[in-house]
Image: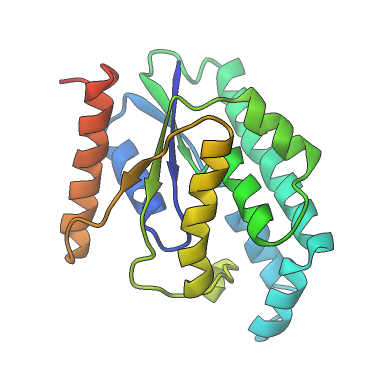
Length: 204
């Protein structure tokens, strides 16, 4: 079974495309982002204080355990689907971020990646990686627990690219095709479909 990854910095639009892609083509099974729930729970500890929350979550002694737990949840979701025949009859698994992405996030936060994260990154090898350019119109969306600012998101694109290249992968850049949000989403989906079709993966 082939593994396809959608990667990208905050507000690059990857999760929106991931959701739309899965809704459009039932031949794929999704491996979701596992960090949002953790971030929301942590954000609740600091009601109304974005700066205090950001300082706490970006401290390496807090950031590393969060990444460790997030990686365990993603790995558990993947292996659970495999054990329950959730991949049966599917063309591929579509990841909303891969373990290698989180290695890059740790690098940006000057944090040593947890050992389990490195283990999963090597054990579950993607066949194709799509790296979304961004960010688009930027919001911090504090209610989700997200804390990255626009400058960090722009820098993260290069870090993610390097993280994949260091592990032997060549990410396919997914640009912004249209200033109209809906048209851009559809164009990005079509771009991914075209690239998958070239591999013989997608239906013609």
